[in-house]
View 1 (cartoon, rainbow, N blue to C red):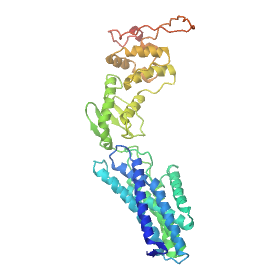
View 2 (view 1 turned 30 degrees about the vertical axis):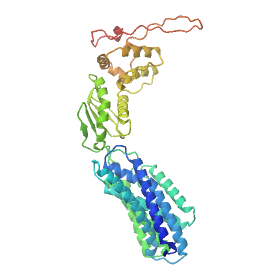
View 3 (view 1 turned 60 degrees about the horizontal axis):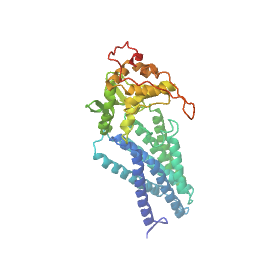
View 4 (view 1 turned 120 degrees about the vertical axis):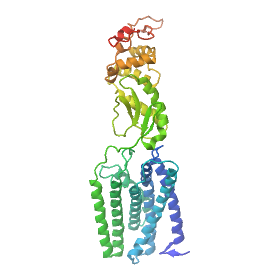
Length: 449
């Protein structure tokens, strides 16, 4: 078996093959966890492959540290030329980038089978490549500086902790770590310029660390000069990255729409959810017809935009297309029609109306007046309920609903003793089948009894 500076080449090849396989498996698993479920968009793929570095990066750092400590033990203080010093860490970078390329290829195969919205961001892939190289160089330097058996796992854990802290830190710090920021919004889109500046920073700091280490072990002034140039490049990347303005609230997109039975429009990457959204919102549109909240169009809006329903349009949020997404969007929209009431009594009346709009059984509530109101409201037809909501929509929105809106409330309770205890039992009048034939706006709800 041939030896390379005291390290078996076959052993290194086998270790590299195992590392590539492990990185590929971890990369696919991590990328799949970052993918927004059900979304067909290239931005989704880019975010996934960059997000996979959370797991693959520390593994790459641990592998690089393992090779570095074995390399240093094998050299035994031998003199190194710049090329001989850089050859091994560059080979490690090539190995780990091969696993990254395989991850991108597997996800790309998935995407070509379906129509994807947008386009692939090459600067985004550059961030992934540069970030993985940085992990590897940090691991290499750690393994060389501390050639101990515990160094590889400590290098991996240290990298994981460091970059997780950066990603979850202040707004300026999270730009330094290779990532996109999570969660992200498809309406926001990714900035190619920001990705390019982030790549400059990552490549610069990677080169500065690697060349700085090479200058230390080779004592070559030229290598040190190159390391200083890399520091300048890294500084330029940071300056450009921090000077990058905050992204706009949303980008103009061409919606994908379904026009029957109501118009439902979503981001092109979420067009697979049109049918389910239409089925969820059509009954709501039917119940709200003729009221101030009536709508004929449902439109997806950015996640950071507050939902403000207005005439004819129902804005919604759709974070992903996971199971139950349509019901969650419908529930969020209905909650935006009228905020919860601070008063328990008023909120009980609001919940009766909300249950009807959601298509759920009317809640009785803990109070007798709520139970009577639910019974009274259940006696109305769908048409009468829509007319009722049209007349009292402003009271519904402003938490002013009371017993007078639901037939006037229960009559004074009658009491009767029981053989075992003296308890009070309320006796309610039977709710009427509906309001009288006259439906003038001036009519008092008390006349509906």
